[in-house]
Image (cartoon, rainbow, N blue to C red; front, side, top):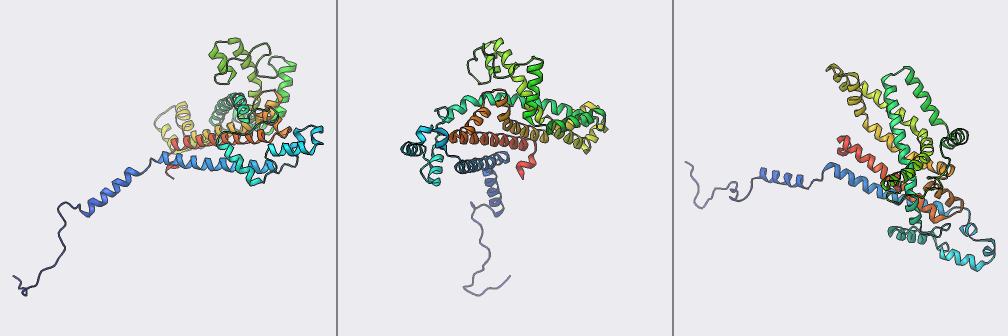
Length: 378
């Protein structure tokens, strides 16, 4: 028993109130609250990519506007007749109507404001809103590019896998030689040779346009003549649209089949030498099951890259092909706009192509993240 002086009180840690949680439970509750607020990794990754894509599109508008403003030719000279050019008042009125008499920052701010509302200006060659022209011609280009991309992916992946399977064999050597040849040859040269061979000499394919002149275009639903003809039940229009599509799509596909083949061959060879493929073989799986179930499946990331690059390259190459085969799409519209110095149309095409590129790459990145969790968690 300990003696204490009178009036002295013993001190120590105050007891916690009965309704106060222990320090450990408070930490657990805070951690649980943070866990509830945490966004799913894939959604967070998607939002970051969307934000960066918006910045890229904004940068494209700025670069496109600056490049269009430093063109040495005068839009008034390209779009007014000689008699109008001799009248200074007409020239001044034209420059005021087009906003060419204002400073560049003011012109760009006005262009951005119109762009947000969907106003891309009025085409000087068609006298229609640029947005209407692009909406009318985009389906033709997409039909051509989508078919060419599918052809390139199917043929390139098939021969790439077979070349990897028979590495060093005859098929591997032939595939690599043909892929190098296809990548090296210019697209417009392939188009000219194909037109002379299959249209002029053999006469087995139509030469230009999207449909035979005697046929009326099908009612526009998707904008793809082949799909719209099938939806309308018009087999004659479908056969004609498909025949007109074969040659330009094949020429486009030939320009990237080699790249897809080499991508696929390299990715499959790398997968075949990996440990999980060796483990599959050790378990007694057949060669075909290991090849397609393990090696090709693990190369899906590289195949996504090949598909994205193919679509982007083919979209850029349509300018030559559409002009050669009179394919009334975005490429031909861009060619005519640039030769006529139709600046609103040129800028509209540039922004549309950039937007398609951004969307395609965004989809590819999201597919990467879906297939590989390491990407969305990094």
